[in-house]
View 1: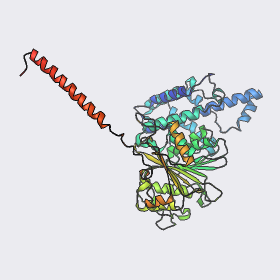
View 2: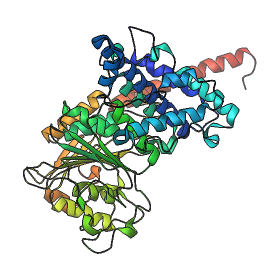
View 3: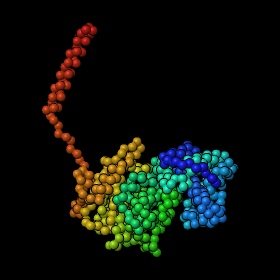
View 4: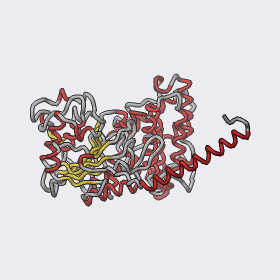
Length: 510
């Protein structure tokens, strides 16, 4: 299992090679399916390169294969003999190569049960339904293994010198897959710029617990972890989709995240992040949950105040069964630390309807504000998110607040337009964060509303009620307009006269 030594590497080059590897599946396999095969192969290639690199280092240090092997027992993961990428590459012409890949992944799971148990359970490289009949399947898998054998994809740590090449490449691919997945793209990925904005607004600190109850592929959690600036944090998450949960687990591993606890299950129907029989509490809770989720599980939540069994999440009111937005909001707030010494805070992306819809949602929204939990409402540009062009907003809640005012920011007009999708620029993120920190009113951009003003508006949070973005038309110079009209009339008279002269010369005048 040896790889060639190449001294230079480019993130863009790596990304391009990996994206081209998708050609093996394009047109024959659904993008929602082939993303799993590409990302799993990338994962396998990376851990194989790391394993080789560390073994070579220990061998050079000790001069003994036995000692090097003993040192390998203390690695972050175990790579069983024959389960590495390079062995599979050598066997790429095997008539049962799909089965061989599945066996290798199963062996890796069994050898790393605490970190990777179940990660590969939802994917089979030997699936006829997904990859075609035997002959076609073998050809595609052979091509895939050969694509990853490109010497530029040598991802040994000693070669990439501490750069997060693999983590960045994984995020790049997930973003590309999300962009091409249509409506489903938003189910597993939040654009990097939006994730960065949320992480900066919530400002996670060393020693804090950070949670995403609808974590998708984990991009928001990773951005929050990076914001801490050290490995002194604890990451938690829950994801209802098994394939997406697996992506998140691999994403955490490839980003070298410090012991994340990511669980597979439905947060609203069956929260799994518990301490005893009560909900676990966190310093920071962040999420981009599915917008207005239908059939979120209201029938299991209980209809009485204080329902929801031991979790007691919906004591402010029960969200409507056809829209799960306030179910997620309530869950997130209830899982923050409530002690005076703990600054529990929530950052969540929501559709604008959450800001003004009435009924049970209006009741819960009013309760949040009366409890002085809502800190800020931030309107975002349209077409930022995968799978939907509608504009969204960020709500920031804090358990410990210095005043009762709520800051409204209308950031909907500042962005970089794109052909298929808009994006926040660095200056847009900087301005939103600075305005949030300063908590000041800026003409046509932000407004610090008092509790009394919000109460007068019947607790309606629709941003235009507070931030006036109307820009009056410049005054019309009537004298200049009149002069322009006279000039145009004069020009018209000249043209008409020349036209009449031409017609006379041609003998066509009336």
